[in-house]
Image (cartoon, rainbow, N blue to C red; front, side, top):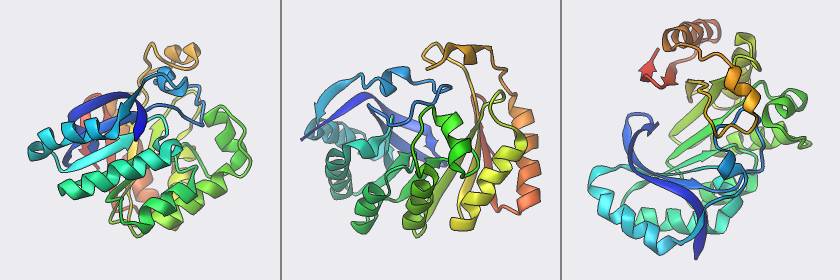
Length: 247
């Protein structure tokens, strides 16, 4: 079986908090977030690779990693290949991480039912209301936030859940992040919440976001600390070009 991927990072210290991981970037996405830095992935660029070859690379790096993460793009769009990959990862004795936009609850259910997810990371773009979400994801998908809620409900028994929100200054206010985290907390109270830095790149979907300011790490820390106190969160981090910091 083959999956379409864009790239592989054989050892990452930033994709699963506190754990070294092998990261596979799946190609293709059902969102078209205008501020996304991965235009080639949205276009579906990449190459078809035999899962067996990916597994061989994982085995060679298994001494130095704890997790194998599928990210993208949106990996659940290739659910058959994703499941096959994770089954092989489990056979090696490693843990599986899924980084998803949570738009495909049935794919999440399929993987969870087979105990194939040890770390569930999802980007909650803004408050969970369809009209607010459409502006952030660049496409109108009816019922999208209900799908996301359902995915979180299915995933909530996973021990390590990471809720990520990227702070895009021209699209989000601090209150939007706070409402997004409130919505997620209602479903997965013990999740880790991560405020991420928006960092413009030349592969942006919409080049106008190149003009967005880069919010400094210390300012993100202040925002995260404020939200943490207001809605009484246990575990909050900031992820930026400067690294990952627990608040």
